[in-house]
Image 1 (spheres, rainbow, N blue to C red):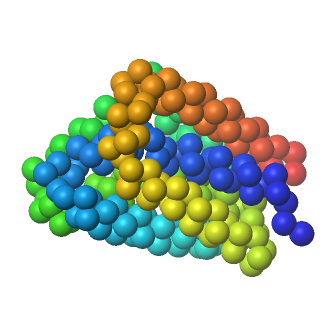
Image 2: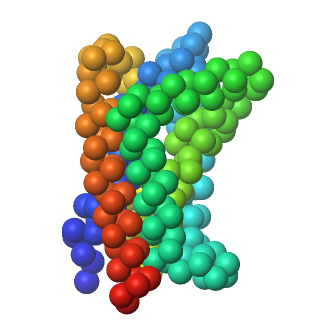
Length: 209
């Protein structure tokens, strides 16, 4: 039977890691000069590509770890530490600065039509944090039915992200600089707590179970 608490935890972890409100203003910066239909097309393409990438890791992450001889407990510890660092960056406003620098480099180097692939899908949506979180969560969803539920969770989170990118202008106007700063820090604290839980579970798995 599917554990509802695990599903809620997965939704929370992925939403906080992907950070739809934080990506909205960066998306606007990436698509300066585009019409609304063009922005919608870029957002849709980027979200679909990111979903495919994360879905592959959700389905094969545990197998890849097993092939490399890495236990899921060890990966939980490593992934939890990585997520904690991302949370630290969110709390102290360093993550958005890094993402903005990534987007600026991409605009100068890549053609406008490739923005959906880089940097939107990779690394802004399906970045190291989201990939690590997906692999971590896949260890808690071992059966075929549970993996299907995890794919559904990914689809839900990416759908919410697409909606936030589609209404990015309104979100940016509504939140403003102060609202974005408060929300980012709040999400960072939540992600830090989730990251610590991953590390605790990993330590229990490695040293106890």
